[in-house]
Length: 508
Image (tube, rainbow, N blue to C red; front, side):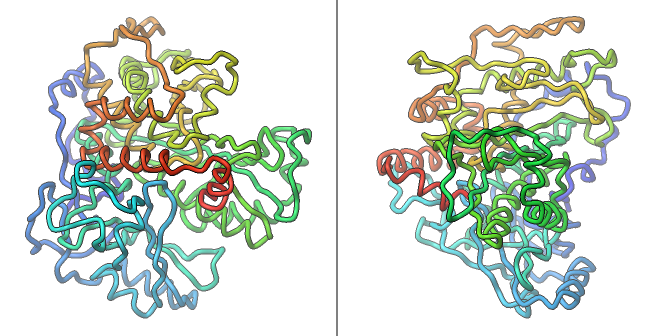
Protein backbone atom coordinates (compact mmCIF):
# COMPACT_ATOMS: atom_id res chain seq x y z
CA UNK A 1 0.00 0.00 0.00
CA UNK A 2 1.28 3.51 -0.84
CA UNK A 3 2.70 5.58 2.03
CA UNK A 4 1.30 9.08 1.68
CA UNK A 5 3.08 10.19 4.85
CA UNK A 6 6.47 9.81 3.18
CA UNK A 7 6.26 10.35 -0.56
CA UNK A 8 9.96 9.79 -1.08
CA UNK A 9 9.81 6.15 -0.03
CA UNK A 10 6.92 5.18 -2.29
CA UNK A 11 8.66 5.14 -5.63
CA UNK A 12 10.34 1.97 -6.84
CA UNK A 13 11.44 3.23 -10.22
CA UNK A 14 15.07 3.77 -11.08
CA UNK A 15 15.42 7.48 -11.82
CA UNK A 16 19.12 7.69 -11.03
CA UNK A 17 20.42 7.65 -14.60
CA UNK A 18 17.95 10.07 -16.14
CA UNK A 19 19.30 13.30 -17.52
CA UNK A 20 17.33 16.48 -17.10
CA UNK A 21 16.46 16.50 -20.79
CA UNK A 22 15.15 12.92 -20.61
CA UNK A 23 13.18 13.80 -17.49
CA UNK A 24 11.53 16.76 -19.19
CA UNK A 25 10.78 14.69 -22.30
CA UNK A 26 9.17 12.02 -20.17
CA UNK A 27 7.17 14.62 -18.25
CA UNK A 28 5.77 16.17 -21.43
CA UNK A 29 4.42 12.75 -22.40
CA UNK A 30 2.74 12.29 -19.06
CA UNK A 31 -0.98 13.00 -19.09
CA UNK A 32 -2.44 14.77 -16.13
CA UNK A 33 -4.44 12.45 -13.97
CA UNK A 34 -5.73 12.09 -10.47
CA UNK A 35 -3.60 9.50 -8.74
CA UNK A 36 -4.89 7.01 -6.24
CA UNK A 37 -5.12 8.15 -2.67
CA UNK A 38 -5.44 6.02 0.44
CA UNK A 39 -6.84 6.68 3.85
CA UNK A 40 -3.85 5.39 5.79
CA UNK A 41 -0.24 4.99 4.76
CA UNK A 42 1.68 1.87 5.74
CA UNK A 43 3.96 3.97 7.96
CA UNK A 44 1.20 6.19 9.24
CA UNK A 45 -1.63 3.80 9.94
CA UNK A 46 0.39 0.60 9.76
CA UNK A 47 -2.88 -1.27 9.47
CA UNK A 48 -3.91 -4.12 7.20
CA UNK A 49 -6.79 -3.00 5.04
CA UNK A 50 -5.99 -5.23 2.10
CA UNK A 51 -9.44 -6.82 2.26
CA UNK A 52 -11.21 -3.50 1.79
CA UNK A 53 -13.04 -3.03 -1.49
CA UNK A 54 -12.01 -0.15 -3.69
CA UNK A 55 -15.40 1.38 -4.32
CA UNK A 56 -14.52 5.03 -4.82
CA UNK A 57 -13.60 6.96 -7.89
CA UNK A 58 -9.98 7.61 -6.90
CA UNK A 59 -9.17 4.58 -4.76
CA UNK A 60 -9.57 6.25 -1.36
CA UNK A 61 -11.27 3.93 1.05
CA UNK A 62 -12.16 3.43 4.67
CA UNK A 63 -10.54 0.51 6.49
CA UNK A 64 -12.56 -2.49 7.58
CA UNK A 65 -11.06 -4.45 10.50
CA UNK A 66 -7.56 -3.07 10.97
CA UNK A 67 -4.97 -4.78 13.12
CA UNK A 68 -3.17 -2.81 15.80
CA UNK A 69 0.40 -2.26 14.68
CA UNK A 70 3.73 -1.42 16.23
CA UNK A 71 2.90 2.24 15.61
CA UNK A 72 -0.23 1.92 17.71
CA UNK A 73 1.68 0.07 20.42
CA UNK A 74 4.22 2.89 20.54
CA UNK A 75 1.41 5.44 20.87
CA UNK A 76 -0.11 3.50 23.76
CA UNK A 77 3.26 3.54 25.50
CA UNK A 78 3.46 7.31 25.02
CA UNK A 79 -0.02 7.74 26.44
CA UNK A 80 0.88 5.78 29.58
CA UNK A 81 4.27 7.48 29.97
CA UNK A 82 2.78 10.99 29.78
CA UNK A 83 -0.39 10.15 31.74
CA UNK A 84 -2.50 11.47 28.87
CA UNK A 85 -6.15 12.16 29.53
CA UNK A 86 -7.28 13.49 26.14
CA UNK A 87 -6.43 13.28 22.45
CA UNK A 88 -7.46 15.94 19.95
CA UNK A 89 -8.54 14.82 16.51
CA UNK A 90 -7.63 17.90 14.43
CA UNK A 91 -8.54 18.81 10.87
CA UNK A 92 -8.15 22.01 8.89
CA UNK A 93 -11.11 24.05 7.72
CA UNK A 94 -10.94 25.98 4.45
CA UNK A 95 -9.26 28.92 6.21
CA UNK A 96 -6.50 26.71 7.62
CA UNK A 97 -7.81 27.01 11.17
CA UNK A 98 -7.79 23.90 13.35
CA UNK A 99 -11.17 22.34 14.05
CA UNK A 100 -11.00 19.49 16.53
CA UNK A 101 -12.81 17.13 18.82
CA UNK A 102 -11.11 15.89 21.97
CA UNK A 103 -11.76 12.38 23.21
CA UNK A 104 -10.82 10.65 26.48
CA UNK A 105 -7.56 8.78 25.98
CA UNK A 106 -9.07 5.38 26.82
CA UNK A 107 -11.29 5.66 23.71
CA UNK A 108 -8.37 6.38 21.36
CA UNK A 109 -7.94 2.86 19.97
CA UNK A 110 -11.63 2.61 19.14
CA UNK A 111 -11.66 6.02 17.45
CA UNK A 112 -8.59 5.15 15.38
CA UNK A 113 -10.61 2.33 13.84
CA UNK A 114 -13.97 4.06 13.41
CA UNK A 115 -13.02 7.73 13.28
CA UNK A 116 -14.61 10.74 14.95
CA UNK A 117 -17.68 12.40 13.46
CA UNK A 118 -18.02 16.16 13.01
CA UNK A 119 -20.66 18.29 11.26
CA UNK A 120 -19.54 18.97 7.71
CA UNK A 121 -20.36 22.65 8.01
CA UNK A 122 -17.60 23.14 10.60
CA UNK A 123 -15.02 22.63 7.85
CA UNK A 124 -16.79 24.05 4.79
CA UNK A 125 -18.04 27.22 6.47
CA UNK A 126 -21.00 28.21 4.26
CA UNK A 127 -24.31 28.20 6.14
CA UNK A 128 -26.58 27.52 3.15
CA UNK A 129 -24.79 26.79 -0.13
CA UNK A 130 -26.86 26.94 -3.30
CA UNK A 131 -27.38 23.80 -5.33
CA UNK A 132 -26.03 25.42 -8.48
CA UNK A 133 -22.88 26.63 -6.71
CA UNK A 134 -21.65 23.47 -5.07
CA UNK A 135 -21.48 19.99 -6.55
CA UNK A 136 -21.68 17.56 -3.65
CA UNK A 137 -20.72 13.95 -4.22
CA UNK A 138 -23.29 11.21 -3.85
CA UNK A 139 -25.00 10.29 -0.57
CA UNK A 140 -23.83 13.45 1.14
CA UNK A 141 -25.08 16.95 1.79
CA UNK A 142 -23.84 20.03 3.57
CA UNK A 143 -25.79 19.19 6.72
CA UNK A 144 -24.37 15.68 7.02
CA UNK A 145 -21.48 14.51 9.18
CA UNK A 146 -17.94 13.93 8.01
CA UNK A 147 -15.52 11.46 9.59
CA UNK A 148 -12.09 12.43 10.95
CA UNK A 149 -9.63 9.58 10.40
CA UNK A 150 -6.24 10.05 12.12
CA UNK A 151 -2.86 9.85 10.42
CA UNK A 152 -0.97 8.16 13.22
CA UNK A 153 2.47 9.48 12.27
CA UNK A 154 1.25 12.93 13.34
CA UNK A 155 0.43 11.81 16.90
CA UNK A 156 2.26 14.12 19.31
CA UNK A 157 1.99 15.00 22.97
CA UNK A 158 1.19 18.72 23.16
CA UNK A 159 3.70 20.55 25.39
CA UNK A 160 1.38 23.56 25.75
CA UNK A 161 -1.76 21.61 26.74
CA UNK A 162 -1.95 19.65 29.99
CA UNK A 163 -1.98 15.86 29.55
CA UNK A 164 -3.25 16.19 25.99
CA UNK A 165 -2.02 14.87 22.64
CA UNK A 166 -3.12 15.62 19.12
CA UNK A 167 -3.32 13.74 15.85
CA UNK A 168 -3.89 15.37 12.44
CA UNK A 169 -6.78 13.82 10.55
CA UNK A 170 -7.92 13.38 6.99
CA UNK A 171 -11.62 13.90 6.33
CA UNK A 172 -14.07 11.51 4.71
CA UNK A 173 -17.76 11.41 4.01
CA UNK A 174 -19.95 8.92 5.84
CA UNK A 175 -19.90 6.79 2.67
CA UNK A 176 -16.11 6.49 2.84
CA UNK A 177 -15.14 8.95 0.12
CA UNK A 178 -12.55 11.67 0.67
CA UNK A 179 -14.02 15.10 1.30
CA UNK A 180 -13.24 16.82 -1.99
CA UNK A 181 -13.08 20.22 -0.31
CA UNK A 182 -10.42 19.04 2.18
CA UNK A 183 -7.26 21.15 1.74
CA UNK A 184 -5.03 18.40 3.14
CA UNK A 185 -6.48 15.84 0.74
CA UNK A 186 -5.95 18.23 -2.17
CA UNK A 187 -2.34 18.86 -1.13
CA UNK A 188 -1.64 15.13 -0.82
CA UNK A 189 -3.11 14.53 -4.25
CA UNK A 190 -0.86 17.15 -5.84
CA UNK A 191 2.24 15.78 -4.10
CA UNK A 192 1.34 12.32 -5.39
CA UNK A 193 0.94 13.74 -8.89
CA UNK A 194 4.36 15.34 -8.54
CA UNK A 195 5.88 12.04 -7.47
CA UNK A 196 4.32 10.24 -10.43
CA UNK A 197 6.12 12.77 -12.64
CA UNK A 198 9.45 11.78 -11.08
CA UNK A 199 9.93 14.62 -8.59
CA UNK A 200 9.59 15.47 -4.90
CA UNK A 201 9.16 18.80 -3.15
CA UNK A 202 11.37 20.12 -0.36
CA UNK A 203 9.65 23.07 1.26
CA UNK A 204 9.23 25.17 4.38
CA UNK A 205 6.97 28.01 5.47
CA UNK A 206 8.25 31.32 6.80
CA UNK A 207 5.63 33.06 8.93
CA UNK A 208 5.30 36.52 10.40
CA UNK A 209 2.96 36.98 13.35
CA UNK A 210 2.34 39.64 15.98
CA UNK A 211 2.33 39.30 19.74
CA UNK A 212 0.16 41.77 21.65
CA UNK A 213 0.08 42.17 25.41
CA UNK A 214 -3.60 42.03 26.28
CA UNK A 215 -3.79 45.20 28.43
CA UNK A 216 -1.63 47.25 26.09
CA UNK A 217 -2.36 49.33 23.03
CA UNK A 218 0.42 49.06 20.50
CA UNK A 219 1.58 52.43 19.22
CA UNK A 220 2.14 52.07 15.49
CA UNK A 221 4.80 54.81 15.62
CA UNK A 222 7.00 52.86 18.01
CA UNK A 223 10.50 52.38 16.59
CA UNK A 224 11.21 48.82 15.50
CA UNK A 225 14.59 47.24 14.78
CA UNK A 226 14.23 44.04 12.74
CA UNK A 227 16.37 41.09 13.85
CA UNK A 228 17.42 42.98 16.97
CA UNK A 229 19.01 40.62 19.48
CA UNK A 230 17.68 42.78 22.30
CA UNK A 231 14.12 42.48 21.02
CA UNK A 232 14.51 38.73 20.53
CA UNK A 233 15.34 38.42 24.21
CA UNK A 234 12.59 40.77 25.40
CA UNK A 235 10.35 37.87 26.40
CA UNK A 236 12.67 34.93 26.01
CA UNK A 237 10.58 32.43 28.04
CA UNK A 238 7.61 32.85 25.67
CA UNK A 239 9.52 32.36 22.43
CA UNK A 240 11.63 29.56 23.91
CA UNK A 241 8.55 27.67 25.04
CA UNK A 242 6.98 28.13 21.61
CA UNK A 243 10.04 26.96 19.66
CA UNK A 244 10.70 24.05 22.03
CA UNK A 245 7.05 23.06 21.91
CA UNK A 246 7.02 23.11 18.12
CA UNK A 247 10.09 20.86 18.12
CA UNK A 248 8.35 18.31 20.31
CA UNK A 249 5.36 18.29 17.97
CA UNK A 250 7.66 17.50 15.02
CA UNK A 251 7.86 21.05 13.62
CA UNK A 252 11.53 22.02 13.56
CA UNK A 253 12.19 25.77 13.69
CA UNK A 254 15.32 26.75 11.76
CA UNK A 255 15.43 30.35 13.05
CA UNK A 256 13.37 33.10 14.65
CA UNK A 257 13.80 36.84 14.93
CA UNK A 258 12.01 40.10 15.54
CA UNK A 259 10.55 41.57 12.36
CA UNK A 260 9.69 44.98 10.95
CA UNK A 261 6.93 46.12 13.32
CA UNK A 262 6.46 46.31 17.08
CA UNK A 263 5.61 42.92 18.49
CA UNK A 264 6.15 41.24 15.11
CA UNK A 265 8.12 38.00 15.00
CA UNK A 266 9.33 35.82 12.14
CA UNK A 267 9.67 32.03 12.34
CA UNK A 268 11.41 29.96 9.66
CA UNK A 269 10.82 26.22 9.62
CA UNK A 270 13.38 23.64 8.56
CA UNK A 271 12.64 22.39 5.01
CA UNK A 272 11.01 18.97 4.80
CA UNK A 273 9.77 16.72 2.02
CA UNK A 274 6.11 16.08 1.33
CA UNK A 275 3.10 17.12 3.38
CA UNK A 276 5.15 17.78 6.54
CA UNK A 277 5.81 21.42 5.60
CA UNK A 278 2.08 22.21 5.62
CA UNK A 279 1.53 20.11 8.75
CA UNK A 280 4.20 22.18 10.53
CA UNK A 281 2.55 25.45 9.51
CA UNK A 282 -0.84 24.10 10.62
CA UNK A 283 0.67 23.20 14.00
CA UNK A 284 2.14 26.70 14.43
CA UNK A 285 -1.20 28.39 13.78
CA UNK A 286 -2.72 26.74 16.85
CA UNK A 287 0.43 26.40 18.96
CA UNK A 288 1.35 30.09 18.91
CA UNK A 289 -2.16 30.96 20.07
CA UNK A 290 -2.10 28.55 22.98
CA UNK A 291 1.39 29.47 24.18
CA UNK A 292 0.60 33.20 23.90
CA UNK A 293 -2.45 32.89 26.11
CA UNK A 294 -0.40 31.16 28.78
CA UNK A 295 1.62 34.41 28.97
CA UNK A 296 -1.49 36.60 28.78
CA UNK A 297 -0.69 37.64 25.21
CA UNK A 298 -2.70 37.62 22.03
CA UNK A 299 -1.03 36.23 18.90
CA UNK A 300 -2.32 37.43 15.55
CA UNK A 301 -1.43 37.00 11.90
CA UNK A 302 -2.63 40.58 11.36
CA UNK A 303 -0.48 43.61 12.15
CA UNK A 304 -1.90 46.56 14.01
CA UNK A 305 -2.81 48.46 10.82
CA UNK A 306 -5.09 45.64 9.66
CA UNK A 307 -2.67 44.33 7.03
CA UNK A 308 -1.90 40.62 6.89
CA UNK A 309 1.49 39.33 7.89
CA UNK A 310 3.36 37.39 5.26
CA UNK A 311 3.37 33.63 4.86
CA UNK A 312 6.14 32.60 2.47
CA UNK A 313 6.53 29.13 0.95
CA UNK A 314 10.20 28.46 0.26
CA UNK A 315 10.54 25.40 -1.95
CA UNK A 316 12.75 23.49 -4.35
CA UNK A 317 12.16 20.60 -6.70
CA UNK A 318 14.18 17.40 -6.20
CA UNK A 319 14.39 14.03 -7.86
CA UNK A 320 12.05 11.42 -6.46
CA UNK A 321 14.75 10.02 -4.18
CA UNK A 322 15.51 13.43 -2.67
CA UNK A 323 19.17 13.35 -3.70
CA UNK A 324 19.41 16.04 -6.38
CA UNK A 325 18.06 19.60 -6.38
CA UNK A 326 16.55 20.10 -9.84
CA UNK A 327 16.75 23.91 -9.53
CA UNK A 328 20.54 23.98 -9.12
CA UNK A 329 22.91 24.52 -12.02
CA UNK A 330 26.39 23.04 -11.81
CA UNK A 331 27.99 26.41 -12.41
CA UNK A 332 27.11 27.73 -8.93
CA UNK A 333 26.07 31.15 -10.26
CA UNK A 334 22.71 32.91 -10.05
CA UNK A 335 20.91 30.77 -12.58
CA UNK A 336 18.00 28.36 -12.58
CA UNK A 337 18.18 25.12 -14.55
CA UNK A 338 15.78 24.56 -17.45
CA UNK A 339 13.59 22.61 -15.02
CA UNK A 340 13.66 25.54 -12.60
CA UNK A 341 12.82 28.05 -15.30
CA UNK A 342 9.84 26.01 -16.45
CA UNK A 343 8.61 25.64 -12.87
CA UNK A 344 8.93 29.40 -12.36
CA UNK A 345 7.15 30.03 -15.65
CA UNK A 346 4.21 28.01 -14.35
CA UNK A 347 4.07 30.08 -11.17
CA UNK A 348 4.12 33.30 -13.20
CA UNK A 349 1.50 32.04 -15.63
CA UNK A 350 -0.98 31.22 -12.85
CA UNK A 351 -0.08 34.02 -10.44
CA UNK A 352 -3.50 35.73 -10.70
CA UNK A 353 -5.37 32.58 -9.68
CA UNK A 354 -2.69 31.64 -7.13
CA UNK A 355 -3.14 34.99 -5.42
CA UNK A 356 -6.79 34.19 -4.74
CA UNK A 357 -5.81 31.14 -2.68
CA UNK A 358 -2.79 32.77 -1.05
CA UNK A 359 -4.32 36.14 -0.18
CA UNK A 360 -7.93 35.04 0.35
CA UNK A 361 -9.33 38.08 2.18
CA UNK A 362 -9.75 41.78 1.42
CA UNK A 363 -7.14 42.77 4.02
CA UNK A 364 -4.65 40.24 2.68
CA UNK A 365 -4.55 41.87 -0.73
CA UNK A 366 -3.63 45.30 0.60
CA UNK A 367 -0.02 44.17 0.83
CA UNK A 368 0.19 43.79 -2.96
CA UNK A 369 -0.27 47.52 -3.48
CA UNK A 370 1.07 48.95 -0.22
CA UNK A 371 4.02 50.61 -1.98
CA UNK A 372 2.01 51.90 -4.92
CA UNK A 373 0.26 55.26 -4.85
CA UNK A 374 -1.44 54.76 -8.22
CA UNK A 375 -5.00 53.51 -8.37
CA UNK A 376 -4.70 50.32 -10.36
CA UNK A 377 -6.71 47.15 -10.81
CA UNK A 378 -3.62 44.94 -10.81
CA UNK A 379 0.13 44.94 -10.29
CA UNK A 380 2.81 43.09 -12.28
CA UNK A 381 4.02 39.73 -11.01
CA UNK A 382 7.72 40.19 -10.32
CA UNK A 383 10.57 37.71 -9.97
CA UNK A 384 14.28 38.05 -9.43
CA UNK A 385 17.43 36.51 -8.01
CA UNK A 386 18.04 37.17 -4.31
CA UNK A 387 15.57 40.06 -4.40
CA UNK A 388 13.24 40.07 -1.40
CA UNK A 389 10.94 42.63 -3.01
CA UNK A 390 9.79 40.19 -5.72
CA UNK A 391 6.70 37.99 -5.66
CA UNK A 392 8.92 35.05 -6.59
CA UNK A 393 12.38 35.38 -5.12
CA UNK A 394 15.00 32.89 -6.33
CA UNK A 395 17.61 32.32 -3.65
CA UNK A 396 20.83 30.67 -4.79
CA UNK A 397 22.68 30.36 -1.49
CA UNK A 398 22.55 28.00 1.48
CA UNK A 399 23.35 24.36 2.06
CA UNK A 400 20.18 23.10 0.30
CA UNK A 401 20.95 25.02 -2.89
CA UNK A 402 18.67 27.06 -5.12
CA UNK A 403 15.08 27.53 -4.01
CA UNK A 404 12.12 29.73 -4.91
CA UNK A 405 10.27 31.77 -2.31
CA UNK A 406 6.61 32.13 -3.20
CA UNK A 407 5.82 35.43 -1.50
CA UNK A 408 2.26 35.83 -2.76
CA UNK A 409 0.89 34.32 0.43
CA UNK A 410 -0.37 35.97 3.57
CA UNK A 411 -0.07 34.32 6.97
CA UNK A 412 -3.86 33.82 7.02
CA UNK A 413 -3.83 31.58 3.93
CA UNK A 414 -4.41 27.87 4.36
CA UNK A 415 -0.92 26.27 4.16
CA UNK A 416 -2.25 23.11 2.51
CA UNK A 417 -3.85 25.16 -0.28
CA UNK A 418 -0.67 27.22 -0.70
CA UNK A 419 1.34 24.01 -1.07
CA UNK A 420 -1.17 22.36 -3.41
CA UNK A 421 -1.61 25.38 -5.69
CA UNK A 422 2.14 26.00 -5.92
CA UNK A 423 2.74 22.38 -6.99
CA UNK A 424 -0.13 22.50 -9.49
CA UNK A 425 1.15 25.70 -11.11
CA UNK A 426 4.75 24.50 -11.15
CA UNK A 427 3.79 21.16 -12.69
CA UNK A 428 1.87 22.93 -15.42
CA UNK A 429 4.98 24.93 -16.19
CA UNK A 430 6.97 21.71 -16.54
CA UNK A 431 4.35 20.08 -18.76
CA UNK A 432 3.54 23.10 -20.92
CA UNK A 433 5.51 24.33 -23.90
CA UNK A 434 3.22 27.13 -25.08
CA UNK A 435 2.75 30.60 -23.72
CA UNK A 436 6.22 30.81 -22.15
CA UNK A 437 9.64 30.86 -23.76
CA UNK A 438 12.59 29.97 -21.60
CA UNK A 439 16.04 31.32 -22.35
CA UNK A 440 18.92 29.03 -23.33
CA UNK A 441 21.02 27.16 -20.76
CA UNK A 442 23.56 29.93 -20.54
CA UNK A 443 20.95 32.63 -20.04
CA UNK A 444 19.01 33.71 -16.97
CA UNK A 445 16.28 35.24 -19.13
CA UNK A 446 12.67 34.17 -18.93
CA UNK A 447 10.25 35.44 -21.54
CA UNK A 448 6.48 35.40 -21.34
CA UNK A 449 4.14 35.87 -24.28
CA UNK A 450 1.76 37.69 -21.94
CA UNK A 451 3.02 39.44 -18.79
CA UNK A 452 1.29 38.15 -15.67
CA UNK A 453 -0.63 40.48 -13.35
CA UNK A 454 -1.96 40.11 -9.81
CA UNK A 455 -5.51 41.50 -9.28
CA UNK A 456 -5.78 43.83 -6.33
CA UNK A 457 -9.48 43.17 -5.73
CA UNK A 458 -10.56 39.83 -4.32
CA UNK A 459 -13.52 39.81 -6.70
CA UNK A 460 -11.18 39.94 -9.70
CA UNK A 461 -8.96 37.24 -8.21
CA UNK A 462 -11.99 34.98 -7.83
CA UNK A 463 -12.74 35.44 -11.53
CA UNK A 464 -9.13 34.57 -12.38
CA UNK A 465 -9.38 31.40 -10.29
CA UNK A 466 -12.64 30.37 -11.94
CA UNK A 467 -11.15 30.89 -15.40
CA UNK A 468 -7.89 29.05 -14.69
CA UNK A 469 -8.57 25.65 -16.24
CA UNK A 470 -5.30 24.16 -15.00
CA UNK A 471 -5.99 24.91 -11.33
CA UNK A 472 -9.64 23.90 -11.71
CA UNK A 473 -8.54 20.48 -12.92
CA UNK A 474 -5.69 20.10 -10.44
CA UNK A 475 -7.53 21.21 -7.30
CA UNK A 476 -10.88 19.80 -8.36
CA UNK A 477 -14.06 21.30 -9.73
CA UNK A 478 -15.93 20.71 -6.47
CA UNK A 479 -13.31 22.53 -4.40
CA UNK A 480 -13.07 25.51 -6.79
CA UNK A 481 -16.82 26.01 -6.89
CA UNK A 482 -17.08 25.70 -3.14
CA UNK A 483 -14.15 28.02 -2.41
CA UNK A 484 -15.49 30.71 -4.76
CA UNK A 485 -18.98 30.40 -3.28
CA UNK A 486 -17.55 30.75 0.23
CA UNK A 487 -15.56 33.88 -0.68
CA UNK A 488 -18.53 35.49 -2.42
CA UNK A 489 -20.62 34.81 0.66
CA UNK A 490 -17.97 36.44 2.85
CA UNK A 491 -17.77 39.49 0.58
CA UNK A 492 -21.54 39.90 0.59
CA UNK A 493 -21.76 39.65 4.38
CA UNK A 494 -18.58 41.41 5.38
CA UNK A 495 -18.79 44.14 8.00
CA UNK A 496 -15.79 46.36 7.45
CA UNK A 497 -15.72 47.87 10.93
CA UNK A 498 -15.65 44.45 12.56
CA UNK A 499 -13.18 42.92 10.13
CA UNK A 500 -10.07 43.38 12.23
CA UNK A 501 -11.63 42.09 15.43
CA UNK A 502 -13.09 39.10 13.59
CA UNK A 503 -9.75 38.13 12.13
CA UNK A 504 -7.86 38.84 15.37
CA UNK A 505 -9.99 36.29 17.22
CA UNK A 506 -10.14 33.74 14.42
CA UNK A 507 -6.76 33.80 12.69
CA UNK A 508 -4.51 33.60 15.73
